[in-house]
Image (cartoon, rainbow, N blue to C red):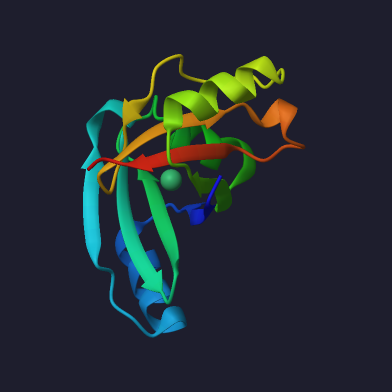
Length: 133
Ligand code: ZN
């Protein structure tokens, strides 16, 4: 894994949270994107090398809706930049980690993504992401 690509934060109200993070980071959101397959709306912020992704649910079945219900707002996942997502998925599977999707899928911000089950990572949902060239 190359580096932390972004940190995902689950929020209830995107407009409210966007202004909070614009004030906090001193920079405007640079991208808003809906990922229909995941039932989420996303907003991205850049601070230097680092990115923050805000996530809200668009449907009651969305994983974000379930997360908010169970845990409330807060850090939802840590995403790592990987050069070859398939190779990384194979490596983690062989090491005994449980992947939440068997094939890489299209995520927000022009990425192929795969999630690693938090039960194998001390309660942290991990996202692998590879830039789509
Ligand atoms: Zn993410």
